[in-house]
Length: 196
Length: 214
Image 1 (cartoon, rainbow over the protein chains, first blue to last red):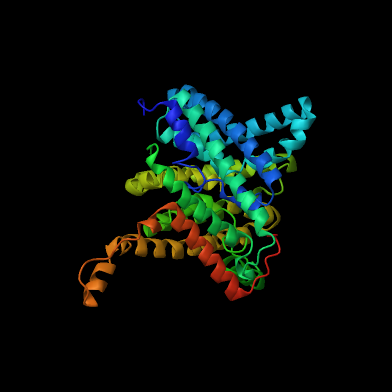
Image 2: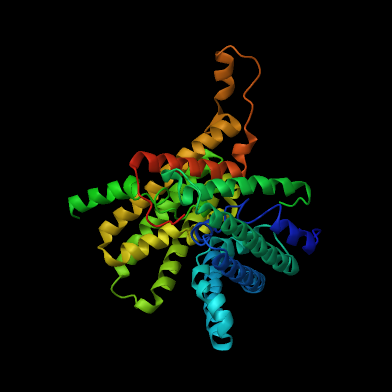
């Protein structure tokens, strides 16, 4: 994975390999928090922020602590602890220094520990053997890709409110169909850059 | 273990309050591997194992865990069992382990497990919690197995890797083989299949979806 430019990875993570629409990660919060544009934007920004930071931290922890010590198999436990600790620290930090940011972003932070996209990015980074810069760009790109997907979804769902939908399909059912159509649209990007 | 309560759980977890179709929880880590039936089966077994034994462990410790660090302890217990699953898969079925990639590790963040720990295991006796864990795992797996079966059949024309559509088409007297729905193997196929399943399940059981607005 030495030869891929970090910029290519960044854009690929947003469009061709969207973390949500191609890898199904972060579905739970995507389905439950995509009813309003404003909250979707808040959560999306928080996810992007945490993703970028934890990708960098986990890279350092993995290659400078776990690999030299020969305990790579503990990566799941260590990664999830790093993520939980980062989220907790960020929440305390934001609460202390910026009330405005806390109201807009802080309330979403506890939701993020269990967002599979965060752990997923750290695991992909290890499996695909990204370098540090590549990992950070991949993390930021994945976060923005997730933000893009949830924003589009929230915009569509806000308009769906007045529409007549079969009762059994309301809520998650119709949301999944829309996600499927969005995923199809994103397949159209696949000619742009190819990474796997 | 009271019989009536365990039967009630059986009904709830497998159909009435199914984790996937009703609660829409935890689809991330497994929906991704539903394009091949065998992979889904392995994931389902792994997830059931983790849910059951985490529930047992949490339930045994429920009176000694301080409430403030409850979530952290639950996460650590769950991830320890996931490590066991991951190592066993790598040792016994290395090919499938490679195909599943990061998704085995993502069982940790599967909301179903955390949900069962919070809602059930932290307030019930060990054996009942184990039973609930097994049932939630099965309730989750069977839905995804149905989806995986359809996706593999239409996408590759195979069942468990054995070509069935080609002989069927020849048997009906047509020439040429099964035209693979490559769409089914890709991500949108997964989303559409799950939506379809939820639609059918809700129509059959006549659920009132109270938790979702739109």
